[in-house]
Amino acid sequence: MSALIGLAVAACFGSGDFLGGTAARRSPTAAVLLLSQACALVLAVAYALGFAGVASAHALTFGAAAGSLNVVGLGCLYQGLGTGRMGVVAPVTAMGAALIPIVWGLATGERPSSLALVGVGCVVVAGGLVGRERDPDAGGTARALGWSMAAAVGFGTSFILFAQTGADAGFWPVLTARAAAVLVVLVAVAILGAPWLPARPDRPASVGAGLLDVTATVLLLVALRRDLLTLVAPIAALAPAFTVVFAWWFLHEPVGRVQRVGIVIGLAGLALVASG
Image (cartoon, rainbow, N blue to C red; front, top):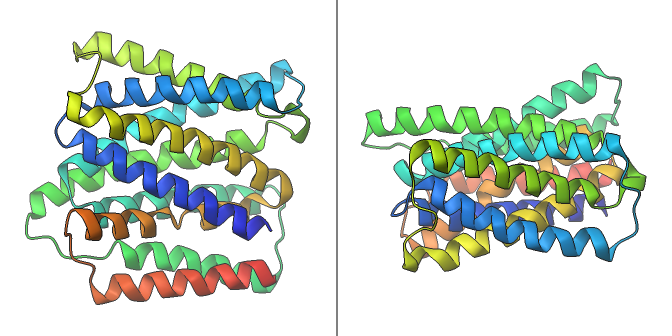
């Protein structure tokens, strides 16, 4: 069940990344983030109030810290997606974001089964293969990859922080995460002098990105509370497969043979994690 929830997390994150990255190609990243996170905050209120949970100071604090890092990661990712190839930036980000919590989980005593660890390895390799695509704009790719690595640090660390919130907290950590994210983006907009809203054509995509992001966070918490961090994080790292498919379908970005192999290996890894 955790593998299926993790796959749903990947689907939501990957779809949201595509929408946010598409909007950031034409509108300032800060404006896209402000609208998306404001919408995410509204839905987070509904999640927090609609499900039972104890809003302890510990859970709220870790949720706020995770949300702050998450939105910084989103900003870096959207910037990378807006300036480089989605089929390259998204997988590299996800692979790095998966490795950080895997290392943390193993260092803190998590011990998945051998079969599950093989599946984790397959998923991590799949993320790298999906991101291995030649780009004629080498300079642009280098800049975009810099953003993607910064995003990986933000996402990977936020996964670890979300895992510390406790099962009895319900979805209150999601609410404080989105509230903190909105505050961070407001400060960024004020410092950068960016517009408060993206261009009108990019607003629906920005709203969709926010709603998918907060839903992915809720599902991530559910998965983390059911299983080990070392297993959930790499499954969530399959998000680029969805981003790549959408970029291929809507933006006509080519999907290379190596990327297709990576997607197949990732699915095989999922099956191993579920079996283990």
